Image 1 (cartoon, one colour):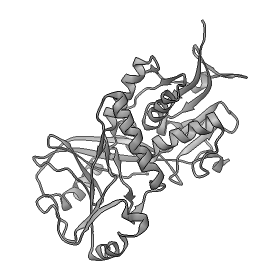
Image 2 (cartoon, one colour; image 1 turned 45 degrees about the vertical axis):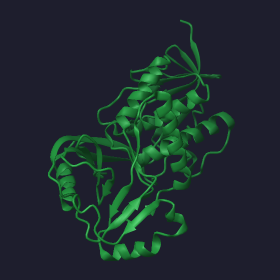
Image 3 (cartoon, one colour; image 1 turned 90 degrees about the horizontal axis):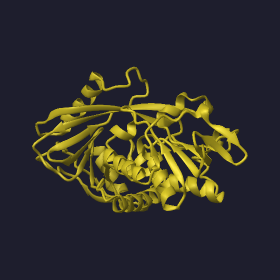
Image 4 (cartoon, rainbow, N blue to C red; image 1 turned 60 degrees about the vertical axis):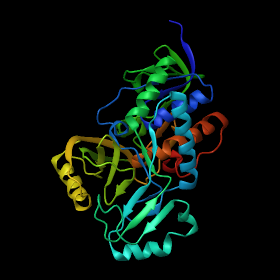
Length: 350
């Protein structure tokens, strides 16, 4: 059988693999993608929120000044190329929990590092017909959500049109090595890039990397209300159209059951009813495993003993913002020998 010569084999078509594939296409590289979607894959069930100010302490997202402009340009270009809508820019209204929190932000919101991401600040109640927020809140910009299933499906259809997609399991043990690259099935490629999400944690190849799987659960609810802002108070609620909302998510790093749980549902509902006023009905409940890391930084780079095998993983809960920028950086590294950011290079664990 005659072998097909490629530049890359990409394994996995979640947020990481999709961004990498689209960047490879843009650079004119020859590649194929192997993917076997898993219903518990976080890329397929996550709400896709992107938020410049996050966490309990309301800190600016790591590398936000680089990540957010690049992310926006990438997804806008992808929408145009794929002829699909999946990138939605919406303000996030984050509710203050206490008067103290309000006072802290009264002094902080105009600071240079934050002011460009803040639309406005309110010291009294806002959206009173929808939410309880006696202390007001902070309205953020450069925020919103990615309809991840729509995006992944659009990328998949595009790859299928290019004859660059195989919906089948990739088996690393069947890789053959030679001086020019690797051989897999009838393909000869210079490198293989593994973007397999939480699956990689169980592979011997990457046992030296400190993965930290984190489970998240999300509810789909139906309500008669319409709103064009994302509310956030311990959990988020995103209106996705036609009275349908996504609410979540949980953060569970002690995983007993990988699927949706009664405890997860109860946790979300408890927080939601604490501030969301309208009546609603739960119509869906999903769970997924986020491929997180102990230092909350992605894993990029070539395997220390297998230079033809590359990893792009560990995006965690911020995959929407991280995937485009670091897909480009990884290819700069592989193609032009430009150094990876030390905080994401897997050499930090070698």
